[in-house]
Length: 115
Length: 114
Image 1 (cartoon, rainbow over the protein chains, first blue to last red):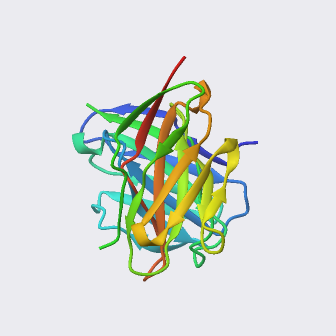
Image 2 (image 1 turned 45 degrees about the vertical axis):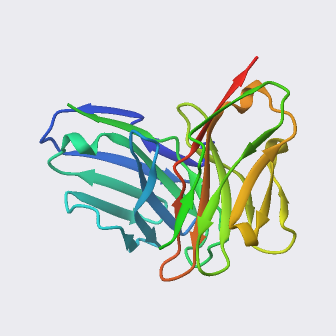
């Protein structure tokens, strides 16, 4: 059983399109995250949700809209895709947002290529 | 500002040789430090973490790391590298000011020669 799963694994699309990436965790965690890993492997947090509520929004463009229908799911919708959105997007979860000692568990990543 | 620096972008070692990956952090309070490994095409897996207590931390796959407050470092070590250790290694600090989050270093890519 995969603890944190993401779909799709690969996504190739044209500039200007709208796309979504889905994330599900079966660990019973309260907190979920989205990270962006650029071409230089730099990982940066985009959003975090705790029990379906937005906690962190790291000055991500409004074209990115996370949605958490329940605490096991955190989806990422991207409008009007741009070339610079090409990256690997990782979903992660942790038991408790309030604890910095909590380990984050990462999904396998979604490789997005915008043409 | 909080930051994590991994000075070595690439490291190549021979199988069986020892390994040390460097990590320096800049953080005002007591840091919560992590090392993650990313195998090709995979997500990140936690190797080990440090919060307090013994400054030498043991992790999975035979890795260990030592926290040195005076040097603001948290270097990862392994006495004998295996070919399967070839991967990208990320150091991270968990921040406690404001909203908790990770700040990652830029990663070190490890290549293992047979």
